[in-house]
Length: 120
Image (cartoon, rainbow, N blue to C red; front, side, top):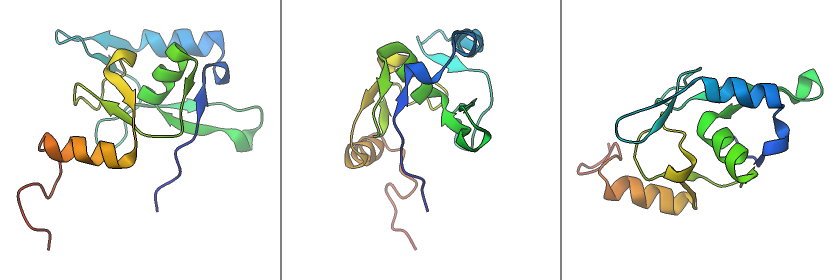
């Protein structure tokens, strides 16, 4: 079962953590900003977000952290990549949307695993 999407806020990160995060980013020729830290299945970067207690530590997708660090808060909804690059964390390539919008975008761009064929 999928975990619910949580709100991420800029004040969840210390100044040191923000500087460390952005030091792991490289800009590509196409204008994407790719995260060079830890990576999850599917190519999405992730970071460890340390809470005030050991039980409040959690992993956060890098593009959600970048969005929060730039705009102040990342809402509890999917972020759609306009560039279709999972490793990209460029805040200007990300827009909040519903899960239905995310799926429609994926199907329209031919990235759905059943796109064009019938699932078994």
